[in-house]
Image (cartoon, rainbow, N blue to C red; front, side):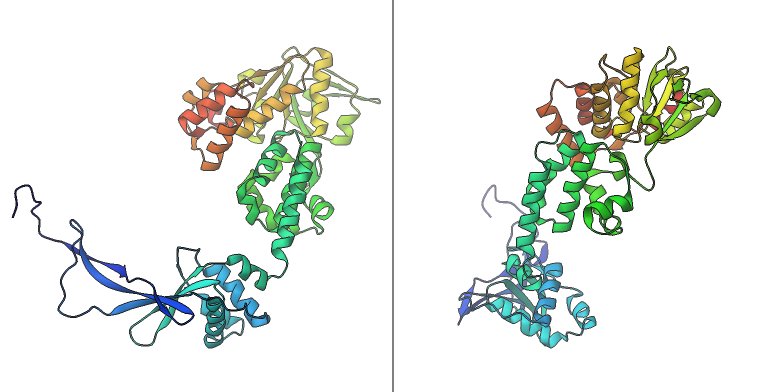
Length: 436
């Protein structure tokens, strides 16, 4: 043993070791064997006889003409798209044959179609050896060809839908509409189904309009059926957050008001103290309000319902003596009338929203409507630090906050966004109720 050479007792762990690719007619194949290899030095454990191959992987060297589609071929192609891996990464196809059998496609016929796809160069297939060979892995080489066979014309429809969605959302200014436009312009959107793209564009335009619609009304108007949006809602909310925040709700548009203030309508006056703790006004009623006699504490806008209720019940010191309004997330066009009337009356405007990107954007939007500006309550970087309960930022939120800071470094509450990014968290309004 030479000086300095590592002294150790080899500890072997079995791993798959692949041979090189070998040509066999129009196909090439390679074999994998389980070989004990030292974890420290990488040395293979000696063996008295050749180790048997355990997996055989095959791909086409010469691609044959693509198979003609029929119902069975389309079913097999669709199942492979759900179960197969990507080029360079084979995936185990557990459940594929059982799924096809339930659709009336026996395993023998499914394997025939997989063989055709293999010879066309659309995939690489792997068989487990030892006894009867069994197909166990698939890596998709040309998933777009399988998609076209499984669902003819879908890729073209997706491209058209993406192009239309991007065109419809270009130039929008509402914060949520801008966010949706950014999603549609990302590489991720290229894999979205056409209906999801259509829904995203419709939601962007809806946010821009400031309108409030019932879920089924929106779905019928923009997606062609009253239940379409309900089926897409989970995926949409994972992408852009709660739809209620941009005015998609179960019922009609209602603005909740509490605290103090006297609303002047053409035929009557409404004293908010009579309707304590709060009252709901339809958009049509709010549009008829000609003037509001605001209390000296002015207009206090709150994003979340639970916090709004606490303010109306006198549990938040800063809201006492003010007219308290619930923005319900991103405020509707009807809500803007409150801000306009506050501006005309010279009433101070204060805004309290969640300490997250949407909360900051909501506060900025409302403040932009006020000719005399606005103050923000519990929305500073110090409030982020002082919050007792926090939630971790999602990777998507980290990217979105970083993009906002890059594009609008001097915007109101930019320091708050930077604090959120530095802390890796966001904070709900409710976290401050205990010491409000």
